Amino acid sequence: MVVPSPIGPLTVTVDGDTVVGVRFGGTITGADPARGPAADDLAAYFAGALTTFTVPVELRGGSAFERAVWGEIARIPYGETVTYGHIAHALGEPGAARAVGTACNRNPVPVLVPCHRVVGAGGKLVGFGGGLDRKRRLLELEARVALERAWG
Image 1 (cartoon, helix red, strand yellow):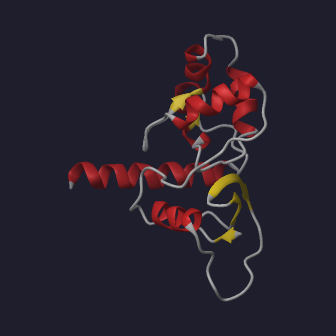
Image 2: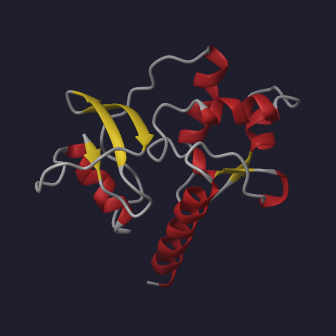
């Protein structure tokens, strides 16, 4: 299904109600919006109403290292960022920041497994499969929502 979003259409692949793939782009056809738990979660996320996805996600494929990286990415709290180097250290591979970047690029479910929350040293925005503009917009959305929630 293709889900509209403020960062462009997202093609979401589901197996039952479980999301197994997300990719940037796609063509929205028909007048009816995409329906189902994944579409609902994404709509709520982009509206700022959801900070933790509830739809089940299954990470298929990838090497053991990539799956470990995706697991670390999934634990990054909403509205926060960590560096590629931080994830490499967390995995016991301090010299593997570039390999972490490659694993991020191969993330089969971006946005839901928030690889946009991984940044370069010093907070530099680098390396996002959906493009740096999308990464910036996702981080800005989360920062705005987190700030609004903190200030009530």
